[in-house]
Image 1 (cartoon, rainbow, N blue to C red):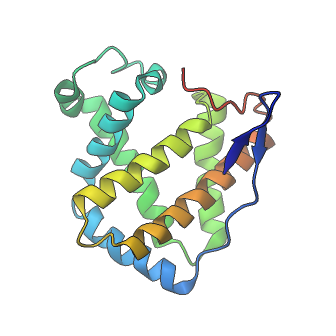
Image 2: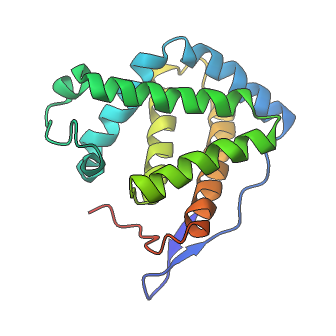
Length: 179
């Protein structure tokens, strides 16, 4: 959704088209299977984030010092945050037919991460990619190519909305650097 221009400014491409009814059903059906294992899936996603993008740990005082993936998996604080992430995704998936509810949830998430936690918005794009990776690996029988395409579209839409919330609250550093 983003492309770097010569001067380092981020060029935001247009928001993806809305999900079709068929895509919503595919996402909800696949999510039903995933959410049965929400704790393990959430932990797998966050551990992958912190291992592959160690700079993302800077926002988590409780486990930013933990280096070993096995130790991250055992962290009570990481498990709690994984549960929050999975619950938020669950609310969004359950509310795909209620655009106001989706917008409300994403506004809360975006505002909290921009204003309170000061998280660079690029981490939402990174996290989206990791969610797709983990779902595709752990649930390959459910997350077919067509289902993955629907998830990709959903996550791209969510990133666009969150980026808009960041702009709305005056976030000035729409950086793509993950240092």
